[in-house]
Length: 171
Image (tube, rainbow, N blue to C red; front, side, top):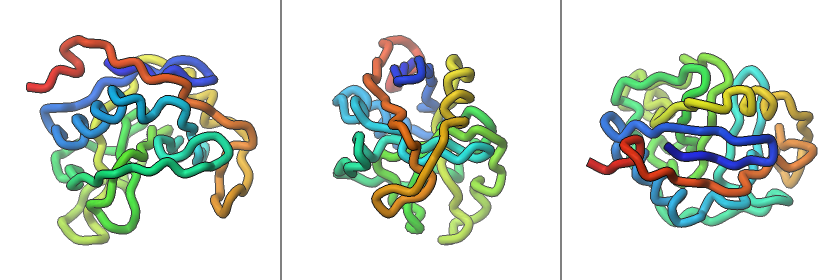
């Protein structure tokens, strides 16, 4: 289990190493390295998702050095409280940014191995702290640093704690 200690409370997540090993391991490696500590949820759209993992306070972009192959074709779907990778229009451009679905977002699911059909890779789920996710999705947002849907007040991932158990074992 991985715990996101946020300024709104703790969110506990489990990663799916069986179906999405590259994505789950990428997230775990970033979490273990401390990459996510001090980052913010920089894009929040109630009824859609909360996105983080790429910016620090003040909308300062954090450099992610690697990208991973999209594993959205492994059968997991963008249901409420699932964890998925954010990316650009390039289906295989996910790096560090992730989002938590706050609704069932079936339109983000894999349809085909085309640029338009790849979808967004679900690689885990929230197992505790849904109330925290629900509080975060309600924050007021604005436009800042050329971005829309940015929280007026920073929602900070203060620290990420990796619990050593079966949920994070690399098999």
